[in-house]
Image 1 (cartoon, one colour):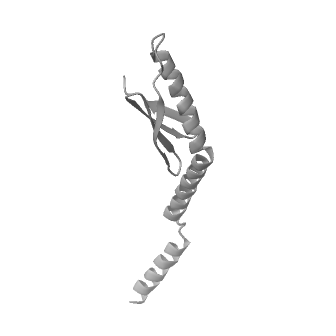
Image 2 (tube, helix red, strand yellow; image 1 turned 45 degrees about the vertical axis):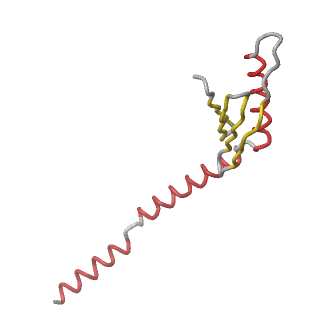
Image 3 (spheres, rainbow, N blue to C red; image 1 turned 45 degrees about the horizontal axis):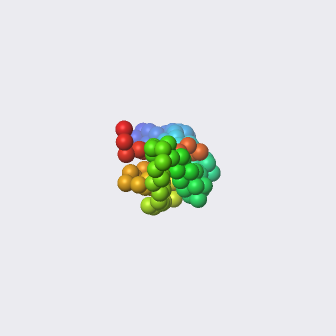
Length: 114
Protein backbone atom coordinates (compact mmCIF):
# COMPACT_ATOMS: atom_id res chain seq x y z
CA UNK A 1 0.00 0.00 0.00
CA UNK A 2 2.99 2.23 0.59
CA UNK A 3 3.96 2.15 -3.11
CA UNK A 4 0.43 3.06 -4.13
CA UNK A 5 0.41 6.09 -1.85
CA UNK A 6 3.78 7.23 -3.21
CA UNK A 7 2.53 6.82 -6.81
CA UNK A 8 -0.54 8.92 -6.03
CA UNK A 9 1.61 11.62 -4.46
CA UNK A 10 3.90 11.69 -7.50
CA UNK A 11 0.90 11.94 -9.87
CA UNK A 12 -0.60 14.74 -7.79
CA UNK A 13 2.73 16.60 -7.86
CA UNK A 14 2.95 16.18 -11.65
CA UNK A 15 -0.59 17.47 -12.08
CA UNK A 16 0.22 20.52 -9.98
CA UNK A 17 3.25 21.27 -12.16
CA UNK A 18 1.41 20.97 -15.50
CA UNK A 19 0.76 24.27 -17.23
CA UNK A 20 -2.88 25.22 -17.44
CA UNK A 21 -2.99 25.20 -21.24
CA UNK A 22 -6.77 25.24 -21.54
CA UNK A 23 -7.04 28.16 -19.14
CA UNK A 24 -4.37 30.10 -21.04
CA UNK A 25 -6.02 29.26 -24.37
CA UNK A 26 -9.42 30.50 -23.17
CA UNK A 27 -7.85 33.64 -21.72
CA UNK A 28 -6.17 34.43 -25.05
CA UNK A 29 -9.43 33.81 -26.93
CA UNK A 30 -11.34 36.07 -24.52
CA UNK A 31 -8.73 38.79 -24.96
CA UNK A 32 -8.90 38.57 -28.77
CA UNK A 33 -12.71 38.65 -28.67
CA UNK A 34 -12.67 41.70 -26.36
CA UNK A 35 -10.27 43.55 -28.68
CA UNK A 36 -12.45 42.81 -31.73
CA UNK A 37 -15.57 44.07 -29.91
CA UNK A 38 -13.74 47.20 -28.68
CA UNK A 39 -12.50 48.02 -32.18
CA UNK A 40 -16.03 47.46 -33.54
CA UNK A 41 -17.55 49.84 -31.00
CA UNK A 42 -14.85 52.42 -31.74
CA UNK A 43 -15.26 52.21 -35.54
CA UNK A 44 -19.07 51.97 -35.56
CA UNK A 45 -20.62 54.86 -37.51
CA UNK A 46 -22.84 57.18 -35.44
CA UNK A 47 -26.56 56.69 -36.16
CA UNK A 48 -27.11 60.34 -37.10
CA UNK A 49 -24.24 60.41 -39.59
CA UNK A 50 -25.36 57.14 -41.14
CA UNK A 51 -28.95 58.39 -41.51
CA UNK A 52 -27.68 61.59 -43.11
CA UNK A 53 -25.33 59.79 -45.53
CA UNK A 54 -27.91 57.17 -46.52
CA UNK A 55 -30.56 59.87 -46.96
CA UNK A 56 -28.26 61.87 -49.24
CA UNK A 57 -27.36 58.79 -51.30
CA UNK A 58 -31.02 57.83 -51.66
CA UNK A 59 -31.99 61.37 -52.71
CA UNK A 60 -29.32 61.18 -55.43
CA UNK A 61 -30.63 57.73 -56.41
CA UNK A 62 -34.21 59.06 -56.62
CA UNK A 63 -33.11 62.02 -58.77
CA UNK A 64 -31.21 59.71 -61.12
CA UNK A 65 -34.23 57.38 -61.50
CA UNK A 66 -36.79 60.08 -62.29
CA UNK A 67 -37.44 61.18 -65.83
CA UNK A 68 -36.92 64.76 -66.95
CA UNK A 69 -39.69 67.07 -65.78
CA UNK A 70 -40.92 64.74 -63.01
CA UNK A 71 -40.41 65.37 -59.31
CA UNK A 72 -38.20 62.96 -57.41
CA UNK A 73 -39.93 60.80 -54.79
CA UNK A 74 -39.47 61.78 -51.17
CA UNK A 75 -36.97 59.87 -49.01
CA UNK A 76 -38.54 58.94 -45.69
CA UNK A 77 -36.82 57.44 -42.67
CA UNK A 78 -38.49 54.27 -41.41
CA UNK A 79 -36.38 53.07 -38.48
CA UNK A 80 -32.82 52.96 -37.15
CA UNK A 81 -31.18 50.62 -34.65
CA UNK A 82 -27.90 50.99 -32.81
CA UNK A 83 -26.44 47.65 -31.73
CA UNK A 84 -23.11 46.99 -30.06
CA UNK A 85 -20.88 47.00 -33.15
CA UNK A 86 -23.29 47.72 -36.02
CA UNK A 87 -25.96 50.24 -36.94
CA UNK A 88 -28.95 49.53 -39.17
CA UNK A 89 -31.19 51.96 -40.99
CA UNK A 90 -34.32 51.48 -43.11
CA UNK A 91 -35.57 54.20 -45.48
CA UNK A 92 -38.18 54.46 -48.23
CA UNK A 93 -37.88 56.17 -51.59
CA UNK A 94 -41.40 56.37 -52.95
CA UNK A 95 -42.61 52.76 -52.70
CA UNK A 96 -39.14 51.14 -52.57
CA UNK A 97 -37.68 50.19 -49.20
CA UNK A 98 -33.91 50.22 -48.66
CA UNK A 99 -32.16 48.67 -45.67
CA UNK A 100 -28.60 49.58 -44.74
CA UNK A 101 -26.19 48.07 -42.21
CA UNK A 102 -22.98 49.75 -41.13
CA UNK A 103 -20.10 48.66 -38.97
CA UNK A 104 -16.31 48.98 -38.86
CA UNK A 105 -16.53 52.16 -41.00
CA UNK A 106 -18.27 50.28 -43.84
CA UNK A 107 -21.94 50.59 -44.82
CA UNK A 108 -23.84 48.16 -47.03
CA UNK A 109 -27.28 48.89 -48.44
CA UNK A 110 -29.73 46.39 -49.87
CA UNK A 111 -31.73 47.58 -52.84
CA UNK A 112 -35.24 46.22 -53.46
CA UNK A 113 -34.41 45.79 -57.16
CA UNK A 114 -31.65 43.34 -58.10
